[in-house]
Each structure stands twice: as structure tokens, then as C-alpha cells.
Length: 406
Image (cartoon, rainbow, N blue to C red; front, side, top):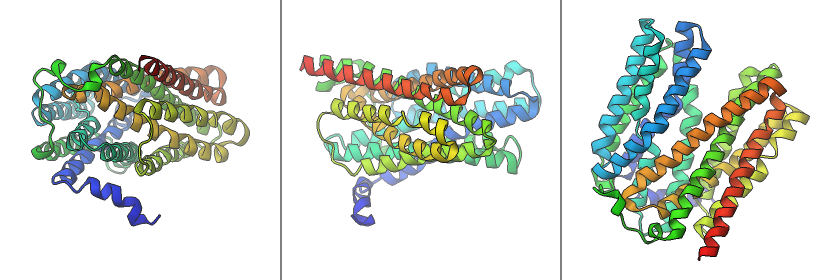
């Protein structure tokens, strides 16, 4: 198949007026998601001389986001994306600027935690984009599948380029440059995104009364908690892989290569997401989700023996393959949520999925760090394998229960 033929489904996706403009704004606003953590760590560590403090501040911000994000998403469903996203992004940008001021003034430590916690109002830009596609192509399942694939690939690109851009700005210019650039991109991107009112889903004042046959069934209600649990375990896969790979590369004297090796995993997921979008969805949404999670569990068995037997040269392709299974998992999981929650709670549903993912990342990072400290880096690769197997078990049990109800 030629390159133009491969790109055709994505070209058709952007044929509707306003889709390119809202996507451009959303990508600008989404890029800082991969910048803020790295920028904060570099900035705080440079000023206060403590990576432990930097890690604690960013962890506090992550916890605050997990609490605040679902409420922000619920307001977005009720009031509309533009009315909520702009002030929410403005408050988050002010929190980032406050953090910069506190660091520059070498303010008391507690002010760093307070300032970074204010960034928890950052809107779920990826979720809002997916909600727009679901609204625009509500009667075209094939187009929604392509859109979800595109958005997953965009996520991977942003989380792959964001840390690189942040590290460059903080080292080539000054330590606060990454945070300042991230705040500017976030607010500017949201302004451009929110200006595209023609593609915005209509607000639903009472989300609990939303319609949707699938959402009203017992199977629909049961599917969402299963997806959230699966995303929690999938997040543990991501968090454990990141910490373990950094520790493994450092233990082999190649600490500088850790970022490149992890980028291979993101690249594999990005490529798989775009290619997966070219396939026509087959079977049920629950069946596709369970199958993709099962494939992820199988491929996550590779990094442990690769690290034990071959070092980085064998670990790199193992992570590339493992990454190729995560994109279909995320794509089918988001599609399942879109089909199972009422239209008036779409932003909230997808934000809960992201919150579960963040919680899993934190848990996986903690577990991997503990194993690395007491057992070494190689045994810690068992954690993502176990987490992926757990995700596959939850998805399989959910699919089996849904078939029984049907």
C-alpha cells in the first residue's frame, strides 16, 4: 500500500471545517504535559540542590491533578469546553509562573508545593479533543476509530518530544525556561482550541440525565469500571518501565542512553497507533479491548529476559515491541468509554481514565523504585509484566461477564 493510500483515512478525518485548527491548538496545549515534570525537577534541583524535594513537589502536583481533574472535566461537560478550559488553563499557567517566582526568590519550601498544586486545574486536552471527534463523527464508527488512533499517536509524540524540549530549554537557556515555555504553550494552545466553537460538543447541564442506549444498560455501566481498573494496571506498566529502564541503563554505565531507549517504546506505540487506525474495527468493542490488553501482556514478557541476557542492545528492541501493544490498548479503551458513558459525561469519563492511568504510573514507579533499591534493576522488569498480566485478567473477566449478561 502506498503512502498516500495509508494517509487517506487521516486526510478524510480532517475534511470537516475547523478540525485542523482545533487540532493545532490542542497539540500546542498538549505538548507541555511532557514538559512540566522535567522542567520542575531541573529548576527546583538547580535552585535547592535536592532531587528528593523536586520529586516530592512533582508528586504532589500529580496527586492534586488526580483529585481536581475529574471535577474540571465534569464542569466541562456541563458548561462547555471553552467556558471551562480557558480559565482552568489560565489558573494552571499562573501556578507555573508562581512556581518560577518562588524558585527565583528561593522562597520557603512549602510555597513550591502550593504553587505546583495550582497547576492541577490543567484541562485534559487529549480528552477534549477525543470528545470533539466523538461528537463530529457520532454516526461514523470507522471515523471515530481513526480519530482515536490519531489522538493516541499524538499523545505519544507529545510525551516523547516534551521532555526533550524541556531539557534543552532548561540547559541551553536557564533553568526556568522550560516551565515558562510550557505555560505559554498551554495557555496559547487552549485559546486557539477554544476559539473553534463550531466543532465543540454542546454542553449538557445535567450530565446524569444524558442519553445513550449503551450507557443505560447493565453491560455499559459495568464496562467503565473494568476499563478504569485496566488503565490503572496499564499505568503501572508505564511507571515501572520508566524507572526500571533508567536504573538499568545507569547500572550499566549508560545513563545518558535511558531517554533514547524509552523513546523507542513511545515511537513503537506511536507507529502502532497510526497503523492500527488503518484497520477496520472488527468484533465487539469489549472483545477488541480484551485482545489488545492480552497482546500487551504477552509482549511485556520480553524486557525481563532481554535485560538479563543482552543488556541495552537487546532491551531496546524488546521495549520497541512492547510499546507497539500499548497504543491499541489505549485506543480501544477510550473507544469503549466513548460508547459506554452518556454523551453528557464524555469529558468526565475520559478524564477518569487518564486519572486512573496517572495513579497507576505513580504506583508502578514506587514499586519499581523499591525493587531496584533492594533487588536490582533486572528483577524490577517483572513488575510491568505482572501489571500487564493483571490488566489482561481484568479485561478478560469483564468481557466474559458482559457476554453472560448478553
